[in-house]
Image 1 (cartoon, rainbow, N blue to C red):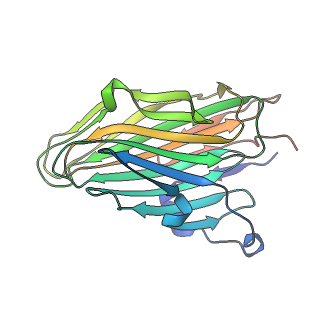
Image 2 (cartoon, rainbow, N blue to C red):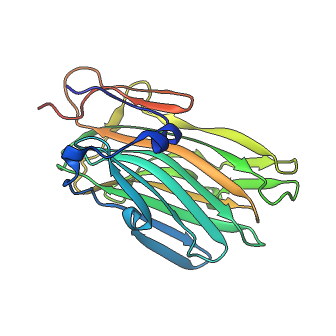
Length: 243
């Protein structure tokens, strides 16, 4: 069994350093897709920032993308292809109109899983970045803001029919989007190729939203597989596969 704590990504981004013995390891496939206003930008997250090996199986991706007119996006994710994704995403709608977004992050896994136990969580904050006196975040068309994916197929969603508002100039409000599979992971699907997190939301003009989220898949095994979370940090207990 291996036990490891995943600390808050904000702290991790300042503290991680590449381990020399792991310098030749190949990072996992970790891609993103940003869709808004009829345009799509996608690619490898590693091509839009930095990639750091922090353990034999864990990698830290940090980057940004501002190629889409009227939108800037930043991310910081710790991933393991055995598998989990945890980290943060921030988007600013720099346009003069409300915009809807779909953002996907997808991680290649290894090895395939004939069955899984899954768990996830999301929280975040909304900011009136342009000082207009208000900001609004809603789920798109009554859907869910957060969706966990396996092989690009729905697993679980959080923040369905969500609506969060800021009503003071340059103000910020925090929100908890809920969780699933806590304190005990729940049954999930077989997973052959990828796990992912999708964000789908509408954001008011000139404003910003940040999300902190996690999605973990474990191989079912005898004993207890549980995930604990506390404010500002994510903790993972137990190894996914018996060696």
